[in-house]
Image 1 (spheres, rainbow, N blue to C red):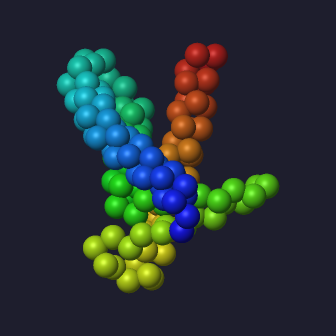
Image 2: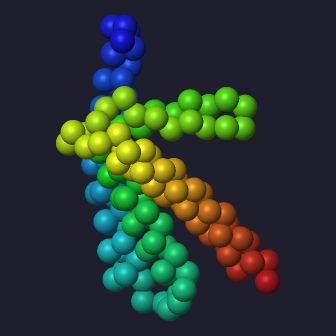
Length: 124
């Protein structure tokens, strides 16, 4: 690898570490406020509000472990990792990258469900 590429990888890893710690702090605050701060009954929407930061914590944890990189071309994405944390096998890294992509897709799906719920709550 060239020296300039390694410098950018170091920056990306620093951003991932900062994102992990800020995600842990703010998501736990959000979960505590959602569970104990609001007295009005939200029902299943409260579960959606709790599951969203939980997926965020899982997403940030996986990102911190494998430091994934993304290559984007037109409508496709390729996730890859240049590191093998804990000297795990290449197949395990592949499964972790697939799990990472699944958690990302779940997070985006929950955002769309939350948008539809709020739209229905406002206009009905």
